[in-house]
Each structure stands twice: as structure tokens, then as C-alpha cells.
Length: 223
Ligand code: TIU
Image 1 (cartoon, helix red, strand yellow):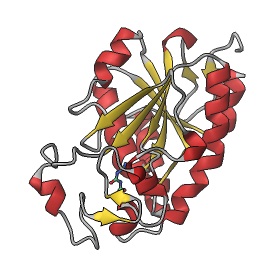
Image 2 (spheres, rainbow, N blue to C red):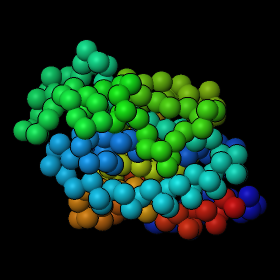
Image 3 (cartoon, rainbow, N blue to C red):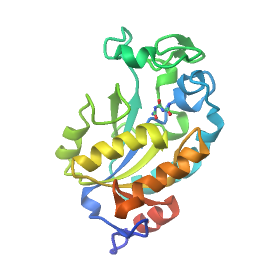
């Protein structure tokens, strides 16, 4: 790792202490990225999200080589749906609801094939995986405790989708005092417009929620 410890980012250089940095990989699950899962059941074309896989796999390699802790999250629910608020279960008119049978098992249910992380980004045995019932990674999870235990203060945030689980998590983290850098080509949306605006919203107003940089800039700082 370089001695500089800053990443060229928007709206300003992102300065970090490598000892307090972690890579957060949000919800890179088959249910969001493969046809037949939750994302498609909501009427989305999953192809757009798949552009994230290659740059994120490369960033994972770099982070692991640099000894930066990697934390993965998965959105999903218990098989009896007791942790799924009725409002979430009944929202919209999807072709299949959470818990219904999908191509890869019951949609967004823990333990099902579709709920797990895609093979290309599979967590290593020593990496933390946080199961979350909501869009944010802090709500009803042990994430805050894991970060405190590991003295993490700064987060490189990646995963899907930019305007939903990434945004919610970054806002939660920002309110808890974490500095977040969102890696622009390692987050994805089903909607190109939301991708563009979602990233702009983070860095606007002097970095109201955090910083934004592409993976080339992040990897250059970590190599
Ligand atoms: N629908 C959508 O854009 N996202 C989600 O439901 N979850 C996550 O973003 N992970």
C-alpha cells in the first residue's frame, strides 16, 4: 500500500487510515443478479447490474491482497417470514413475492440458493457476512458491533442497488460517523438514470453523504 493514503475522489480527496478501512460489499446475491430472482420479479432487467461483477471482483482481489477487511451483506428473510414487515411483503404488485418459489428457491429467503452471493464474488471463509432484513445494513443487524470491534471508521462501499440498499446503508453509516467512499463502477442500478443521480447525490453539497471515486482510483491507492 502507498504511504499517501488518499484516493482521488468527488467532491474532494478521500483521506483514510488503512488500519481503519474496510470494504463493504452489499447484496451481490443471485436473487438480484440472476434471472428468476427477486430483482426480476419486481420487473427489472438484471443485465444492467452484471456490469458491476468484473470491476468488483478486481477490487476484492486488491483489498484482500492489501489486508483490508471485507464485509459482505445479504438481504433476506427467515423461512417463516417473521422478520419481514407486512408492508415490505405486500409492497407493489410483483410477479412473485418474497417467500414465493423462484427459479433459485424461495425468493429472498435465507438458506436458499438464490439468496446467496454470486460465485464470482463468493466470500472467503475469514470474511464476515451480515444477513439483513432491511435495505440498510445497520438496521436489525450486528454490523455496528462488527465495525466497532474491528476499529473500522471508513468504508469503501460497493454492491447493489445504488439507489436502494447502497444509499440506505451509506446514509445510515454517515449518521453513525463513518466516512464512506462509494465506488462508482462497483455499484449498480437497474435504472441508468438512478445510477447517475444516485452517485451525484452522495457527493453533492460538499459530500453530504460521502465521497465517490471509480475503482481504478481506489485500487491505485491500495496497490
Ligand atoms: N429493488 C432494488 O433496487 N433493491 C433492493 O430491493 N435491494 C437492494 O438494493 N439490495
